[in-house]
Length: 276
Image (cartoon, rainbow, N blue to C red):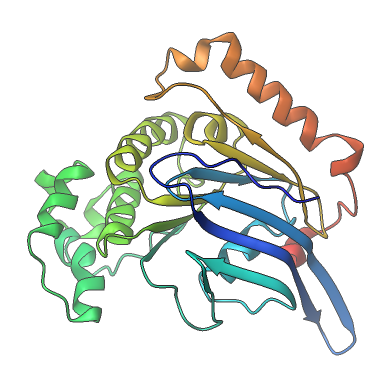
């Protein structure tokens, strides 16, 4: 199956393209585990796309391949028409993982500025702009240990936006937070994304989170992971708490739930951590 969303958003060209992507891991001296098999996905530029699926289906492995942190064993991966090379982050890409990984001895401001320092680029006001964007003006000089979990995640997302990315990879960015904080930050992330218009691929286990944030949701099977179907979420933006109470919102949740538990989405469900 080729799962290709229709063009949407600011651009109609291909943003992120996965073609027949496969990944095998060697476990010990003799065992090999197939994490991904024939994954096909094409995202239009400017779209927000979520990957959902059972634990161990390879969602995070897809992101790590896109980030240049893993080498695929089959298939092609391109970002904005340029192949992703293992060990090299694609130009114009920002990444935020579940663990904010902020440097504890640096302030919020200096953590957000870190990518600019690495690239030896000038600030030109971008750090202050991002601090305001994520609502951390009063905590710009605080250290990570003085922040709540939600604040640390906002700082992490701001850091990922420092290089003005055209592509943003999010791996369960709010997965470790309580439900109330997570929902509030989902609305914040939507606001930030609508202002920045970066092509975004997010891994999540939350079906309602995926529906709230996404233009498209790609449903993956258990290991070996492949894309079962891509669902276009055509709810109007900005999406609000009222949106989450509408019949249309719950119809999308029901549809995605059915796909996750359909026969086509079933397979070796004993992935554990091997499938990543």
